[in-house]
Length: 425
Ligand code: GLC
Image 1 (cartoon, rainbow, N blue to C red):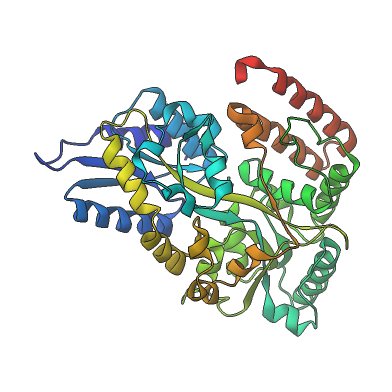
Image 2: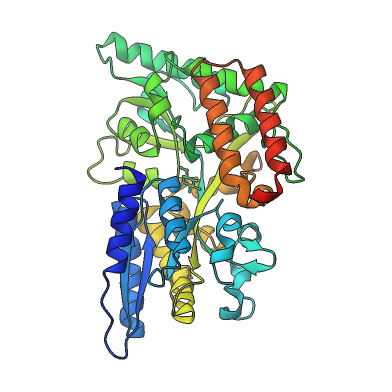
């Protein structure tokens, strides 16, 4: 569905609300990237409403981050009063801050200290805490444990090992007539997910963060060039050219159907792959993404979603209460247990019961993990443009329609200009 149609539908649902009962107020929250996630959010929000004696309307949000951003922007621009709570991506606080309330006045003393400090810092824009962190995402490597074992292979620790293992497993499957089987699936469509994948490749080879926290444009460097060329080499060898049109959903479908040996995805995939009706249940392992070389680091792009209150809400206090409830320990524990979401509270993320159920939680503590933050803090309102420019360049290199040297040098020029564009601030 195109974004315009989607946003008109969303707007129509939103504006069609009737007034709530005399005493009870009615809040509207938008949340959930896909049905199971939306259902968890709905249940928890309804529990809040029942406990507080209010009503809550839970709207599904568009699955893709950029589609959701377009819808939210449209609503915030018309100052829609009926959307109270929004679920925003970790890279959006700087872009949406002007439309969000400062939550600090609604928090108890020390309350924000129970969250990971880096997430609180991420959501603090010019001293205003514009969202509370709800869950964290990390880019992870999912692998078919059974196939690796059958081939006598270890879990790959470098991209080189991954490519070698992928070829061996893929050749074996193809020899058995399985022509749909591929070694490695990931997200190569031109959207935010590609930014996440490509930043991991760059980090793993020491290629920097595109724009560094001090504002220096670093993307035009030999390690970044090498990282992107290397990923381009996977296409048609271990990854289908269709990866260039795939998002998280398609990668997961392919892997869950038993048609891939390795997949890069976010933690929620673990819960889906371990579900009773999963055809690969019990056959999957999860690890950190490979390092560039032996001296490289294991990269994981930091993703995740936050809950924020619209400045146009007629019930900011109640809306902030809903945000505090949903981001509180009880709901986060339940979401971690049932959906595999990584809590935004360190105390919860360390709970043994959760760690036992979700093996990737222990990966957070690994010393050889390099968390990759997208340059959204330094770019602020310009982040969306920065990311789009990066995606176009990366896709051109992956598709072989541009050589990495020329393309990264042109990208660096564009990013310099963007950095100097005062209107975009
Ligand atoms: C996940 C991440 C989010 C990221 C998006 C890209 O939803 O949590 O941070 O922007 O994927 O597709």
